[in-house]
Length: 447
Image (cartoon, rainbow, N blue to C red; front, side, top):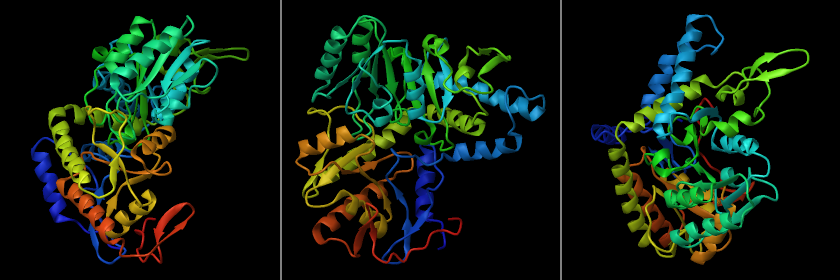
């Protein structure tokens, strides 16, 4: 298979760049179609993993010759690596509008961050979390002091539900865990309002910003949240790094997340003295390249949030209006009334298996979407029931910096054609996934 350059797509990216919108690697990628030929890839799966920013790719290439161990290396390359690694803490603190005293612990991703926080809670901490959260924010909290709330159908009811749950929770440390933007629907939760309620009850709040951070500016101090967790692979820095940013006291008092080198000040035959800073939870050789890439992505996005948001919102309006005209299509929503949202839309089409739809969109139209329950099984099952759909799976289209008007128009046209006349190729289900029968497409040579 030959990977050709899509000149039209390149021109589109150049046009977006002239508006101050960061460009992404892979914007000119072409993929083969099962029916023959190839087409520019329409990546509409940003919510799962966003492509790499061109600025990140350039920065990483520039840094790689200097890559070395951090913190204890005497060599000049080690000094450079340590400087970049530690400087990124300040970059992340600025990116989320954190307090000067907030600590920044580098992790693998949001899941890793919440598992770290869960292990750092003071004994008998009461945890309140909505059951429609992404599994990364839902599953780390276990035990009798955890209360899962069903997500109400209005924002006001969500605030009231947290208020009532906190009033009924035992005295002592308390934590409310909340997503910023739904992984399933893209809808924004009333973070500031819930944080105000939490503060009245003396509780802390942890924000899952995995889906919010790539799309909107975050201001921890304005929202009055205590912790923010995010992932580089959703922030256009797919090099395996994430972060937990927030108040240092619980993290400083907790046992190290991992036991090993870097987390220690002193080790003797009889005792260990652990570090008290963020290094306490960063044992082992850190992902220096991933951390640097995450910092570059945050700096790049921060330069022109207005252009990033305007680009995405225009595409989101175009997408949702088009879906309204597709027979049998029902969009999933947490809330009955319209709310602010990022560019993620999940839907079902009556009579069509979501996995089959996704396979046809990919094989015959060169479109990448997500199907399933999106690591939010409780949310998917409940919301699909509300739409009248069957099962607990849907199709998700998620927009981002690599998305264009042509991509949106293509997925809408493809859905209309599939609903009207079906697929042009045969498909079979194997290993739980739909795939073209006798798929003639070849993978690239490096696979």
